[in-house]
Amino acid sequence: TPKLEFLLTETRGRVGLVTLHRPKALNALCNGLFIELNQVLKDFDDNQDIGAIVITGSERAFAAGADIKEMKDRNFIENYRENFLGDWTKLTQIRKPVIAAVNGFALGGGCELAMMCDIIYAGDKAVFGQPEIKLGILPGAGGTQRLVKAVGKSKAMEMCLTGSVNLTAEEAARAGLVSKVFSPDQVVDEAVKTAEQIANLSQPIVQMIKDAINQSFEIPLSSGLTFERRLFHAAFASKDQKEGMGAFAEKRKANFTHN
Ligand code: CAA
Image 1 (cartoon, rainbow, N blue to C red):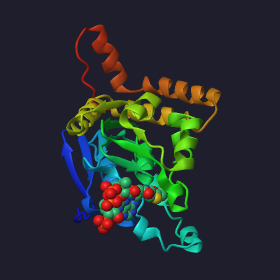
Image 2 (image 1 turned 135 degrees about the vertical axis):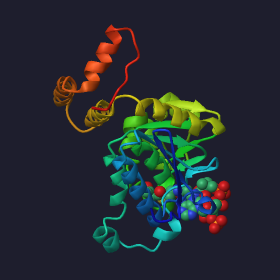
Image 3 (image 1 turned 90 degrees about the vertical axis):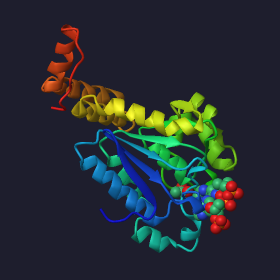
Image 4 (image 1 turned 60 degrees about the vertical axis):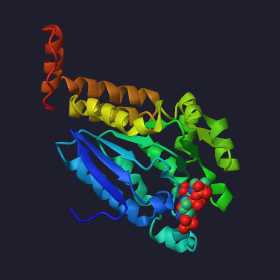
């Protein structure tokens, strides 16, 4: 693998851990960082020894947003021609579960990046916000869409329209944006622990669950329920279903082979 400029990566057991590492710019999400992130995530997704992924930043910043200095002179035609920010959505095509372990600032694109992940764990000093309006722009990677679904309309409107109303980790947890809050030095370990737990369950079924939950954001309920039931039916074609139910009946621990 080529040397990474903006990221650190490691594997812990069956978990792939990516650390955004651009400390001088509070992990501002420059183009190069996202190119590397997409590549690393794809490599983890293709690696059968990895079952789940954790993305984190530093204790000071998960990410302070898209790189303002890099984008300040862009114009409409460039944005349109290059589909600026379009490649950020590649993260949502990763099939394995992705957990964001957020400490410090998760602002603008940083908050949006966290929301593209499947689960968010936060350190108790984390701050979530969409300050784009203060720069004369609007959120461009899901802030007006995913945030509404996570925290409801009134809070999302208040955050995006003022750019100054941020959520603390506790508030984000109460609103449902974040699933658990830890002390800052525990967040990554706890995220890895949950990722490892998921990575040891049946991988095809894990992917079906992620797929089904994500469909709930895209399609009507009746179609989502049909989609879910078809996957439920299909699960019975797996060895892991026979193993999981067999182990329960025999009062032993299941040993999933991801088949
Ligand atoms: N882009 C580029 N550089 C950034 C940055 C960003 N989003 N955020 C921080 N930095 C840089 C600062 O310019 C500074 O660099 P220098 O040392 O070279 O001056 C360095 O990181 C440290 O930042 P500060 O000195 O500002 O640190 P602070 O502790 O005083 O403030 C902060 C922290 C409140 C997060 C502040 O840096 C800030 O407001 N950052 C911008 C947040 C923002 O507006 N994000 C939205 C970006 S637009 C976007 O994301 C669009 C989208 O939807 C995709």
